[in-house]
Image (tube, rainbow, N blue to C red; front, side, top):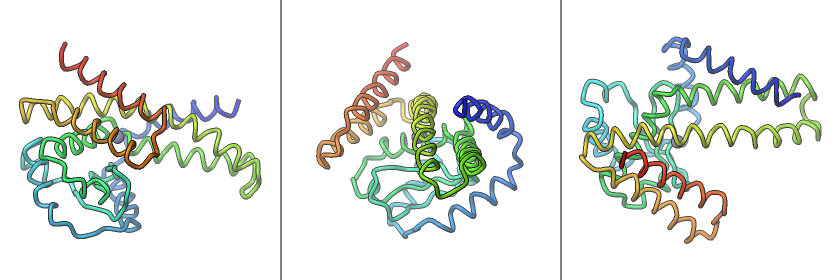
Length: 218
Ligand SMILES: [Zn+2]
């Protein structure tokens, strides 16, 4: 029942999000950015150059790319056209086409408004849990955990869609989508190395490679 209401509210968020004014999204983005551990990085200019190669100078100028101190091999789409790349990723010495896919994948999240949908759903989730259980109860933790699992499934679908958008952009700019395959092979390597290998995540990575190859070989 609760999950049903949550899913319905999730759809409502999806309907509203495309009409959120850019100024409001920018404010939210600034707020989030101010909480992030931003760090200077020597590669930042080359990332900006790659973004320009992907979408052209005019569009690239609207984006704010920065590096954050975070050991995760990851990058995030932050509201207000901001892309945060973790040092756990910048320190892996990825080649240009692989970084290009990382950026193109994040551009896919902006195209699909995933970042705003996600914040909207998190807001709905937090409000619902507070209304239904009152905060700080065991039941709150239980409900949050349960709904977070549902949230993961939404996210996997968003990831595949962002991959599809990103791989097209990559292929248009570089005449190859090798960077996408290199990235996911790297994800597998890192999972092996850190022994954090999760069966589900490995399946997910393979599924992502398969989906990309299928799309591009059509
Ligand atoms: Zn993503």
